[in-house]
Length: 204
Image (cartoon, rainbow, N blue to C red; front, side):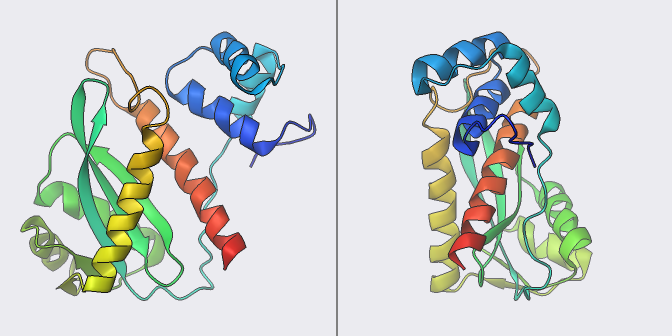
């Protein structure tokens, strides 16, 4: 994680990183955190935070994964809509993976789930009634079933939790770049997941 020898509160650093990942320059971030949070730091300090930020896997492999609960939902990014894919673990309620795509199909679902399997191993996959999931799980040789009411409640709350917090700054990641590869969106989502999972560890 970040070196905090400058004693800047972690929430202020997260806020600065968030603004940078939205597309602001380091100088603009420096001005913004002073105006919004009364934190006076130079653009050089902001640049150092960015260089030192490396999201770490906070999910403890010592904790047993019972299954993967996977779902997708539409997310507005600037002027376009993207598909947000999320996978969670029901026992610890940590987010295992997130990604975004411009399309929704079996190939994207298979690619997303395969990334989770490479990190956490093979487990049963719980999804909604989307037709792309059973085929993806069959290809990956994973057991699949439809959400129970409890699993559906868990994933829907997580999805809404993410969407509510992406609305905080300027109506979802304002981006005017033509042909944007969405790197800034994924950067922020990784930052968000890292913070969320750390909070879940503290609560467990």
